[in-house]
Image (tube, rainbow, N blue to C red; front, side):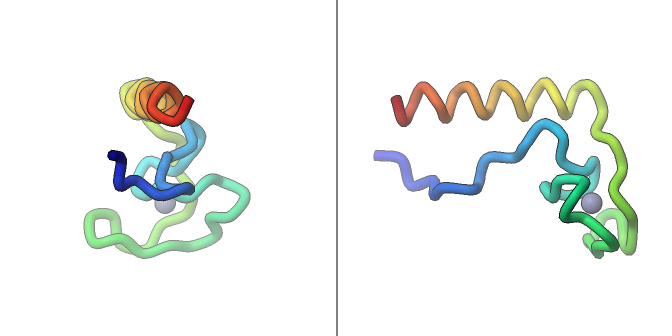
Length: 61
Ligand SMILES: [Zn+2]
């Protein structure tokens, strides 16, 4: 069984440094990036997130 909970999937439009989407972002602190504003994800991040979403969708289907 999957232990993943709802809301763990990261939207492809989430920040490069954290899983928060642009409209909710404001200023955030992460260990890696420190204080930052929303930064567009890299193409690789977008792709990985979309694949993770698809995998999760198939899992719950
Ligand atoms: Zn961020």
